[in-house]
Length: 475
Image (tube, rainbow, N blue to C red):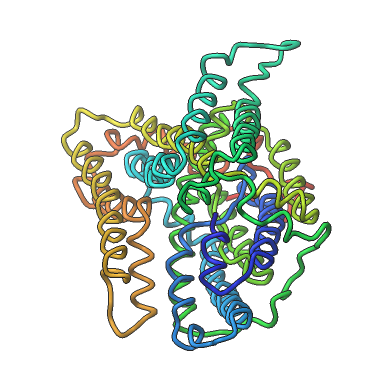
């Protein structure tokens, strides 16, 4: 979805869009392998982050780049500027992660403070759910209904003692509705419909398959040497911080859905460091967005009840394989967006409910806890909505000074629901009667998971492979 929106704005062609989609798939496959092998080791898939959209759109509208008349040259110049900004900004996560600075910060987190953060990792994406389904209800609503029926009502259907419909509900429903959408397209249903309806509903409108090469292996700096600009880099740093906060919430959710213990502070920090290296790879290859934990795949852990790290690693292998076989990658990329959005309605909701489940470790009879939870939730939804509405009307964010980098930094931070929720919840939780409220906040349950040796199961979940713990002993 991200390349489909950004590449035309940059002056890129369908061929450029296919190359960016392939490169994004390839790099996120590598990042997923790195994260599951050396990072948190949780079964999380890495994907493109929407947090990077604000600074990237700002770079696209930079007067120096926008004034380039040749559209292909403008695309290449913008891509190199985005790459340079991302390479510089990735250092934030690399430093915070590998220096264990994020582990120190995470000591201020409690189950109460994490509830709105994790919940809004799911709820904060509500605009990518039913509003997108509504763009093509004739395929979006059948997809939503079929996915719920297969994954919930028919989940006990078994073949050779394998709960086949529960495991493969998303694959089966997406394939059936995709075929149905193709039938509608081939029968001429959308021939005289508005352009927007055709764009959202047709399976042949994307022009991706014809533009895609059969075999294309992405490589670093294929768009040319990155260009560096301090203002662009500062704006991108905000997106890196947002991606870090959103991923922290997603890691906590993934550990719960995968029946693992909450990741200890140093494991969380290690994962952030490797995510920073992933964003560095995004910059070097030119994926047009940075990495974050794929929220929909965290929800899929709960839907399929498959929390195996090995399964995710094999999936990463498929991502890399399909990214090199351009026609196959483009075939999957031709799936209409409402089909994905229908699945998001379920998967994002599952992730949000994991955040709410942390309330069981807190005392919700406490007026203090009710105040913190309610205010963090409301502001986490309300502030980003204000920024979105303002931007759609004024065509720039509420922060609009002569310093472009400052505008990008603040607008990016406050566009993110989990980031706003973290700022509000963690501040209130650590300043409001915090000394007398440890039990109400859920700290006795949380404290034993902070260190690697606090729980015997941590070794099973988070020990590094290839006996690397000898060289990098856990803290």
